[in-house]
Every structure is written in C-alpha cells, then in structure tokens.
Amino acid sequence: MLISTRSRYGLRALVRLAALEGESPVSLAKIAEDESIPIRYLEQIFIKLRDKGIVKGLRGPGGGYSLGMPSDSISIMSVVSLLENDFLPTNCVLPGFEDEQCESKDCDLTKNCRTRQLWANLRALTVDYLNRHTIADLLYGRLEKLEG
Image (cartoon, rainbow, N blue to C red; front, side, top):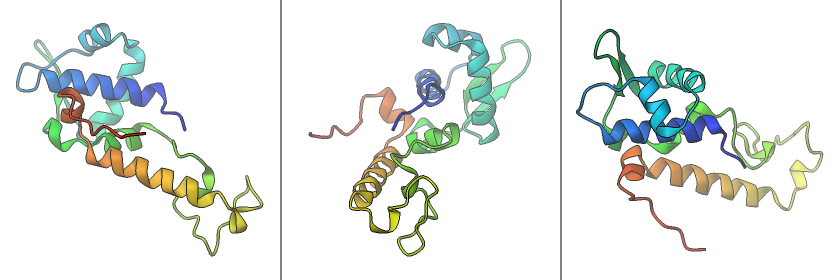
C-alpha cells in the first residue's frame, strides 16, 4: 500500500497554505519552491484540489492560491481519495467486492480466502484514521499516535 507523490505533495502544499490561512494568496511557484515540488506536477494537483473546492485561486497581481475551506474541515482522506486512483492493500477489498459475490480477476481464492479479512480490516483502519485527521492536525502536529 503506497501513497503516491501526488498525495504526499498535495498534503504538503495544503499544510503550507494552512500555515498562511487568512493571509494573501500564495503563488504556486512559491509553494513549489518552499516544498521542493516540481511546479508542473503541483499545477496538475491543484487543478483537482480547485475543482473540489479544497483550494481557491485568485488571478492577477497579488493572485495565487488559498484554502477554499477551513483547514480543520479538510480531512486527509478527502485529499488522498481525490488524488489517488487506489491505495488499498489488495483489489479484493475494493467497494463492490461483497463476500457473497466476491470474484476478482486477480485471485481465484477470494470467496474462501483466509487473509481477506486482514486486508479489509487494514483498509477500514486506514480510512478511519485518515477521515479522523485534518490538514490542521498535520499543521499543528495533532495526529493521533498509534502504538505498535
């Protein structure tokens, strides 16, 4: 289960904007420079973030980007699910693979798999954790620490 650079960069850029919440909009070039993110890649990420209202842009002199909503209302999951195609541990825990009709082109054992519940639990824990935490939590270091 890997989170792509799209999500890692997107989250870093949003934390940068959250740190400047209430100030003037910030140019993508400044965010890219401060966070060591290729600007072309950041442009692609911000198109998706803007389309969902997570960020808003202002054109012209003094323009740039700011958060489109308060940082404490942007869940990490909402960003990751927007920027990722899929980051689940296995295909058989994707929505739509119900126990009774579980058929996967990648695996013939899904109906009788002894490990499927492990992957389903891992997915549920991950989604729950990312839903419970926000961009503000990242900014202020308020992520719940898991013991392990």
